[in-house]
Length: 487
Image 1 (cartoon, rainbow, N blue to C red):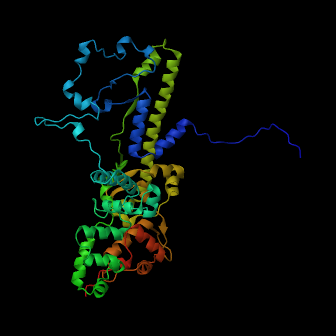
Image 2: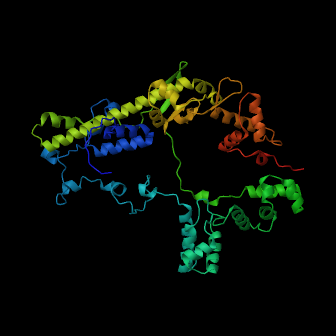
């Protein structure tokens, strides 16, 4: 079969994502804090954009600095003046009294006298040390040789977030090329450091190291951890007392000591910062009706600079490149403002639809949460499901029932036997929590027993589904919830 080239015409439809459309989609899925950062970056990159302060003081905003794409457009009096060191009048304008607090490099240090009331900002800069830095500080204070400290650095690099040693001795020998006895010695030195129980291979060894620090390595708590940890997990104190030939009271006292230990010593030095949530929407009940309020606090109020408008209108003699640059930036700024406004309107409409579907939840709580999918809201407000998915991601609403992510209101349905209104999975989880809280601690309910309770209310729920929901709630299985027997 011969190969040949041919020309042909084909008519087809294709969706082309323009940069403006891509920006609008990106803004739609951003969280509130990410949106503020994005707007701030646009203000810094686009000289035509301004933060409109007129809404704060009722007056027209005047920019502190009028940026320009081309210095040829500015009058000489409007251009930035260079500081002349030969002219003392410029130098005298600097506030030397506050120089150390505003102009000094961060690495400098200025001691603070007793007469000063306010501390320098340099005195309050701090960073919470993580586990590795805390241990390195202690390692530097030891009398180990340089070679042994090198081993110590390798051991610290193999510690997990919980403070456990993830590499075995053989791996460290291969990594360092040192003798096994030297590595074992350095490991013992590190295990004596703070926090107690660090650099252990597992939880059991960590607890034993902590008991050794308390001079209890030969007492009953250590014996329980070494030999009867499986009884401790199930709270079978009678079996422990019988095996150890001790009274139940002694076992209870030993368990109280064990409970006071830290099974994950490294967590105390975690440098993870908490994530704060700022609601995008507030739902308030006013005169018996719910009112949706968009939270615009902290969002810059954008406007297009009148300075650059005047350049296009009045300064017709401006270079063509400058006019084209300004026009492009003005189009970009106008599209950004329009996209932000569209984003806010979409969030409002989605929240309005959620309120309609989940009205009983806002009135009575989680038990009345109804099954809801993205398609329901999409059809209600005539938008695509992907748009609803982007809007509900990383967006939060403050309601009389608490603060929730918008995705919280979309839950799967659990059918009832013989028909009837379906229940949401979240309301089922809430009911499981309530049942477990009210159960008899001497005879905790198994997953099968929980499923049977729901079956009495014509709710079809498999045992494995109950187990999944229970684990999602962080509730232990029945054998671990059982109250220990003391007689």
